[in-house]
Image 1 (cartoon, rainbow, N blue to C red):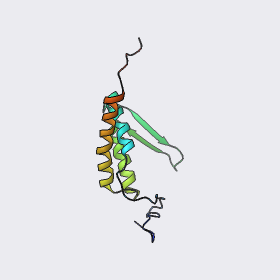
Image 2 (image 1 turned 135 degrees about the vertical axis):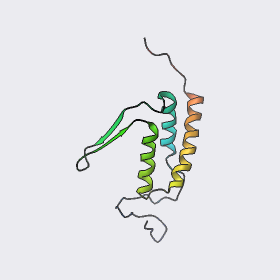
Image 3 (image 1 turned 90 degrees about the horizontal axis):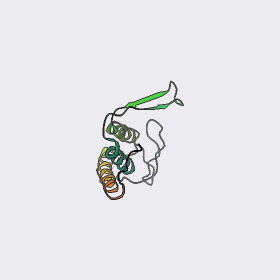
Image 4 (image 1 turned 90 degrees about the vertical axis):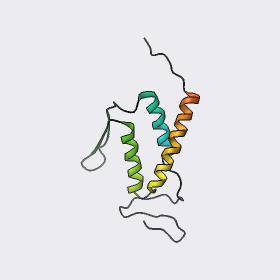
Length: 114
């Protein structure tokens, strides 16, 4: 990790531009959204494929659970040098709590259309 004179992170070994922000909890919004989706649709039994044809050869990601997606988000931020693992872990705990509060306090079940 390379830091500038003022302490801001400029870029890492793979050339990823990183924001000049201090360390903090990370991925709170992702974890909160995933928690709401998990409570609505369940954790597993999904068949989610994400592709990125802009990358040479194309990238294809296939997931069967929401936690697999969150693990990839966490890894990308850590391996990219944007956050430390403990930022991701702590942000995940807080995000799940936020998602739970949103689900329990604001969302209501609706009857499926017949």
